[in-house]
Image 1 (cartoon, one colour):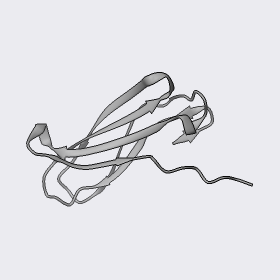
Image 2 (cartoon, one colour):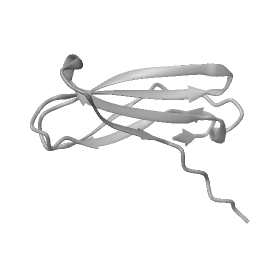
Image 3 (tube, helix red, strand yellow):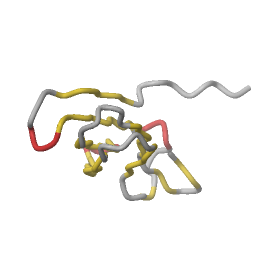
Image 4 (cartoon, helix red, strand yellow):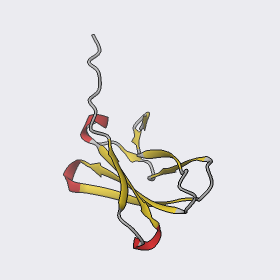
Length: 93
């Protein structure tokens, strides 16, 4: 996500498993820099979010990518979902 000169990653989730999950959100920036944030995902079926801190954008938002990974708590099971920001921005004419 971007606003002004800032960029950050955010994930939206809804957990219908009935078990608490762990989520890790990673923002990958130019120069091999990364920011990782752990997001707790409760066992209730309520929408939630997790996000990385905002930082000043280098080289514009297209130079950034984000990945969200969801798994059972404390390594109690396999990775359940990995989602990334690999879509491209539409060309404006």
